[in-house]
Amino acid sequence: MEMNKTKIKELEEKEQVEKFFKTKLGQEWYEELGVVDCVKSEAPDFKIKTLNGDTIALEITKFIAENKNLKFSQALTRIGNKICREAEKEFNLYIHILIDKYDERKFSIHRKDLLDYAYNPGFSELPDAKILKQKMHDVLKNNIEKLRQGWLVQEWIQVENEYFKISIESFACPWTGKYDCHVNNAGMVKQNPIDELQTCIDKKNDKIQSYSKDCTKCYLLIIGPNSYNANYCSFDSLLLKHRFNSKFEKIFLYSEDSDMSCILDN
View 1 (cartoon, rainbow, N blue to C red):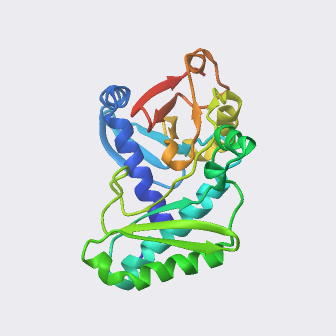
View 2: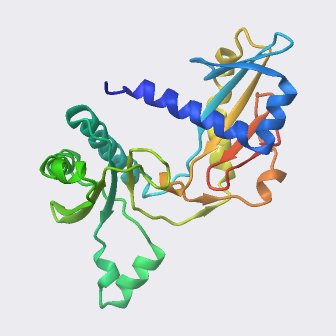
């Protein structure tokens, strides 16, 4: 049965909490609370039951720094993930997809193109989603038997004047261990986007009353996805020196790149 968006989101959130609890900070907090159960909820995302009978609210949010290539990566990832789910539903086949876009600047003889390629990496102009999805579905449908036999399928498709290389295999993604889609895009790394992180916290501050209902305390866990998810940002020691405006008891930040977590000052 194909999972809906809500179910997919719930599974992702459970995985994120489990990853956080495996970090040193997460383990210390888990033991300090005396956790006996961690129940999936709506608002907040989790209600944590403790040995002394308290109910602790844990809300989760993602932080992805804004960049001009973000919408491109997210849109193509959504299309690719739909193809992955269709393969499971229609053909009982689990697949991983990699999408590359041809960059003519890389092979240009002109210096200005090469410089633009170096200092302005990646893609931001969205292709026609309907055409791209149909052509990707055709690649899948025409190569079902090869995929069942474990072959790597690679084909170029044209959408308007752009070319995309679609790579499909019946194995889990080596980066995530999931049967999903990865868009091979790039972007300039943004250093210390603290103001954007505060905006992310503000959105959750506005809803804290609904999270805190029937709970003793309320905590916020911010997930920093890795560059696989088009999150091109980096923090240094300034992050831990900054004091954030927050209504939460504590704010935890978990980074998928480093597989580590920290507490933000508030």
